[in-house]
Length: 455
Image (tube, rainbow, N blue to C red; front, side):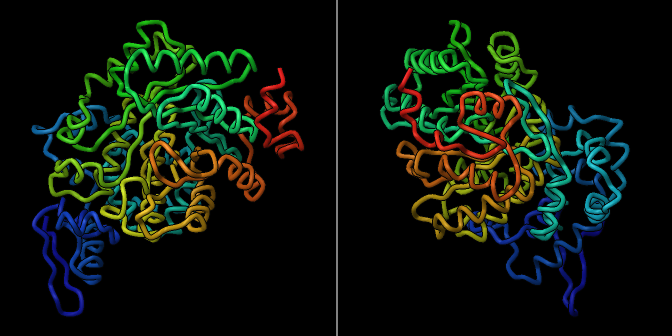
């Protein structure tokens, strides 16, 4: 098909679908650094105009990394639901956007077509959306999953309790866990980023976290975010593991830079089903972030958002409990300022939910990006309105191990209050029985971690 349009007397022509996708994207510093971004606002509008007329079957036929060259492309394409695909294959990107946003299109209608979409299709729709479109559309696409708690129910918002420490000091991590529990968060997962990715070290942390869970009868799932192969070894040695983690990428070359391949993720998912202590049926936890592929010199001249959506489509293969867009973590080389971070967060959430996965967001920024805690909190509100499954909670909002800024433990309660939302039902019941919550609000006992030192 002809990939050209004429605006104000100027003809814009694009060489292929990949270029259209890239130049239709909103401004991102990473796309500019990669040399794939539109060179002007007019060119961006022209690319969006062309993109709006491209049917879904063309986006499937022309992935940004060819089927024969990339195992991620193959995994996504081979896993498409043929019935769902038939429903949307002849819709253009513009028509699919309008259908999703139509007030007569229900959440069930969208869920019925999600497994027929590739990452390129989801990204194409997102590129045609305003930020408010992304919020409205995201809100229409709940994704309910279960590991220990039931996550993603409408009217509920979860949180990952992230108790990192730069030397993996067990007493310090335990103290941070108690601090988070005192604010009644952790229903999504209690997840530690280890400084030392060795089996012996992870086994000690698993034991410590299991001890806390048993002592306080917490409906908690744990995860230690080491390399997936380290976690697999721990599972085989009998560690008490709730979820299995891995960062993923949108191209085979970028995934291989993590020391990971699709077959390895398949094996980890099967081990998790067999050995995790959690009830499931959702066990895998993935993290993503725009710019991953460019930082690995493996972006194949594709734009950040399209590659991010391909990660979401890959994650769908494993029916995960959570997929976390660490949206501002990589830095200004990829998302320069608050405007770019907020746009990326809404796009990531929309694409993930459209593809049928439980998207959560690490509302965060590095110290060398043009953002601050006020803008980070504003982003949390946007994400909450859009209906994200969960966000992150870090002690004092400052991760001393990863050296980035995030949401704090107490920010979750503020969002519950502002949005009228609550934690997962199983978690709220536990927190109420312990006296930390009452009618969805923190009690006078809450916020004091010494509460957990008195037994």
